[in-house]
Length: 407
Image (spheres, rainbow, N blue to C red):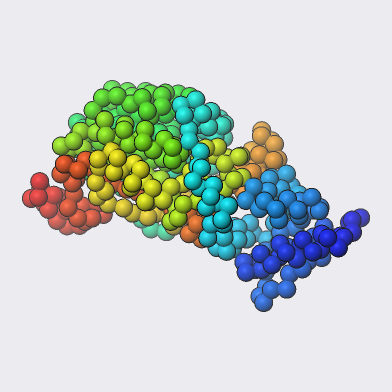
C-alpha cells in the first residue's frame, strides 16, 4: 500500500516540478500523483519513492540525483537518455554555486592522482572488455560516416591523431596517459615511430605490455607505470588523449613545464585531446564522487592560458568532436546494457545503476552541448608547423605534394 503524501511534500514537489517542466519531464510522487501540467506530453517521468528522496534531489540535485538513482529511490519511466538530455538542456548555464566552486577545482598531486586512477581504471580489464571495442579504447571515437562500427571509428580516431601530428618514421613520441596502449601501438605499427607511454594504472600498463609483446612491438613501444610529471628526455612529439581531465587546474603549471622541457623546439609538435566546456564549471558533483574523483573539464581559454602559453607553445589547430563523443557513448551505453546482468552479478545492483547513469548521462550531456570534446594541436613557438592546410589531415589529391613543396 502506498503511503500518503503530506502538504509539505506536495509543496516541495511543485517547486521541483517547476524546475523540470521546461524540459517536459514529469515528476511522480510515491502515491502515483504528479504536479506536472506542462503544455506538451512529457518525454519521461522521474518517479520519487519517498519524501527523503524528494528533499534530497530538491536541495542538492547535482549530487543527489545520481545518489538516489544509484540507490533505486529515484527511477526513470521511459527511455533514460531523452530524459537526461532534456534536463541537461535546461541546465546549460552554471549556477552561482558552481561559478564559485569552479575556482576551487581539485588538484591532483602524485599520490592523489594514483588513488583517483585506481578508483576508476583498475576495476578489472575484463569489466571494460565487456562493453568497449576490441582494443579497449576508452576515449572519443571518430565517425567518418554515421554507420561505421565502433571498432572502425576508434581506428579512425587514432589515424586522425597521427595525421594531425604528421608522424614520420623514426621519430620519438611521448604519450601522457596511454590507457590500454592502443594508440601507442598504433603509432608504432602504422607510422614507424618510437613511443614511451606513461600511465598510473597498474592493470592497464600490464595489459599494454603483454599486448606489445604479442605483437612484436616491444622494441618500439615502452609502457611506463609512472606519473606524467616524471617524464624525462627529449621527443619530437607529445600526445595526450583523455588525460588532461584528470590533471586539475592547480597542476596545469606542472603539465606545461613537462611539455616545455621534453618537446624538441625546432620540429616538435603535440596534441591534447580532452573533454572541455564553453564556460568554467566544475564536473558534476556525483560524477566526481562516484566515477571520476578529481576530474575537471577545462575551457579552451583555461588550456590556452594555463598550459599552452606557459609551455611556450603556439596553438595550430582546434577541432570540436562533441557529437562524435555523444555517438561513442551511445555505442558504449548499448553495449553496457547488453552485459548489465553480468556487471550486476559481479559488482552489485548499485554499481550497475551508477554506471548506467554515468554512460547514458554523459551521452546526453554531450548531445545537449553541456560538454565538448576538443583536440588542440600545438608546437613550440619557434617550430615549423607540421602542415599548412587541413587538406593534409583530411585528404586531398595534392596533400602530399603540397606538404613536400612547403617544407
